[in-house]
Image (cartoon, rainbow over all chains, first blue to last red; front, top):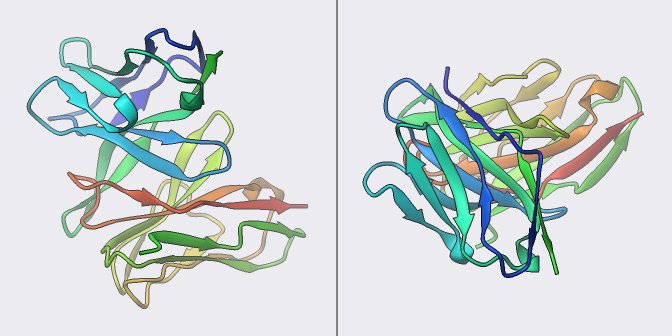
Length: 117
Length: 114
């Protein structure tokens, strides 16, 4: 079964410093990987996805993610953190086939990012 | 374009009561799904639908029913609420599932079962 793991429950980083939120995956076949962000009391918002191609994927709000096949990782990064980046971040992978060309999405448990002023 | 809307935002139920969580989308998306979010457990799929008239079970379907009579609406029914169903519920939709298409999430319903 497809799965993702987020090894850190919480990440703290100072404003202006680079940030990394880690994700590792386990899939059979080619991975389809996603990052979502959840701000307090809000639904999840799509940040970026890796389907194929360049290992560095650029997304919304200045975030990017690096796909590493040998390490089975898909870490989320940002060169300079903002206080407004403080949120819950979820890694996800395309999972079980649902039919009609659709697939389920399997989420990690989430990592709480706190950016300290 | 309202995206994905959910009602109510908050609900308190007593054990044994039933209720329906509403979800609607105006993007003509074929794929819709319901998740529950619990602390430390991420999001878990309850039920999903690949189009009007077609539904199927996800990872944690027990105690919930769904139907999909129109493309726009995908209500989630709690048949007899239990404290274990206290959670935040999210509805999501996408054009063709998640092979390449992004899922759009509603704002959530926070449910407490006493």
